[in-house]
Length: 242
Image 1 (spheres, rainbow, N blue to C red):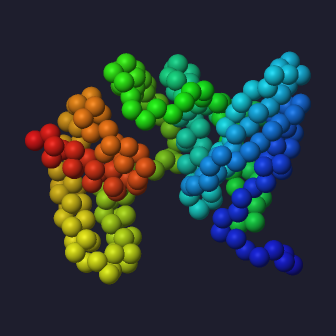
Image 2 (cartoon, one colour):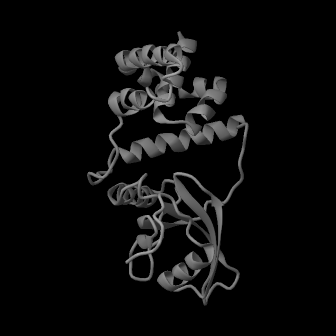
């Protein structure tokens, strides 16, 4: 009989993960520390090999089983590897000594999956200058062109008005039961976005330079929030362009 009390979200030990990575990847030594908790837990890893005594940095991603399925994780890693092959600057998954990219461990709440990624050096920039905006747009264009030629398995999410607007809106019904006026406004905004997204989302994307330069705060909001709020934010951006 298992006497462990059930959990819905456990945090894996950094020390145990360091030993796990050392064994699976054949490193001489590994240091591991958590840097972010969220939909998936993120750890910074420094590993040394026989040839490299200075150490190489990696990022370890521990996925929550209630947030990402194995099929979705596999689609993510397949996409990143395909982009790397096409010389797109992305952080890519690292295979272990046996060639596996996705690791699995038995946690309290069930099976958890882990992926070790290459480390992308750099620093956080709050306000992009003109050159940085140009480089961002250039690499985004290369990413979109390359991704058009990549075929992935069926583990991906479906992004449409139902999954990005009306489904999340329905989930908010109970949360906003005390504020029917706010929910009614969201219903109107979602309805407008759902009816008109084809006519304004592509012009928004094509005119991304104008929006990125003029509405950076809105795009920051979009990065931090759900797809539902993303489309609502784009609706606001669209109103600024008319």
